[in-house]
Length: 114
Ligand code: 5GP
Ligand code: ZN
Image 1 (cartoon, rainbow, N blue to C red):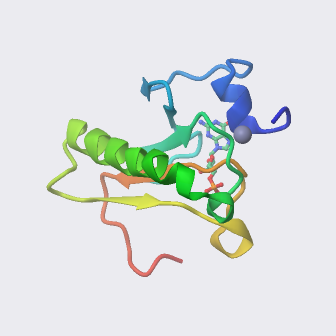
Image 2 (image 1 turned 90 degrees about the vertical axis):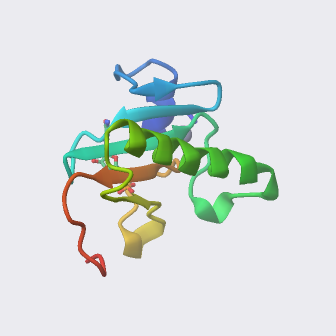
């Protein structure tokens, strides 16, 4: 996907300082953080939104959530709490059409969200 921001970051065409990376995932800080910890857990595979997931992606999505929990624990937020969010399409405010799991922590997070 040549016009995808996160594919460009994954390909190294746009510099980023990954907090974590492995053969399937990359984790970067959000450029516009909404909490003291706000990172994006991004699969290397280009999937535009949750609407495009297939059964083949089940393990990948599971690993994204497990990575989110591991990062929350590493930053000391596992007991206090944190939020993991996928935004999908217009009403949820999705702006980058390559799936990413937001991990937010470090302040009380209102519910319901806006
Ligand atoms: P969405 O609204 O699609 O769920 O989330 C996209 C997120 O990507 C936003 O929170 C936005 O701040 C973040 N973002 C947009 N452009 C960049 C960028 O170039 N670098 C990083 N690290 N984050 C970005
Ligand atoms: Zn992409």
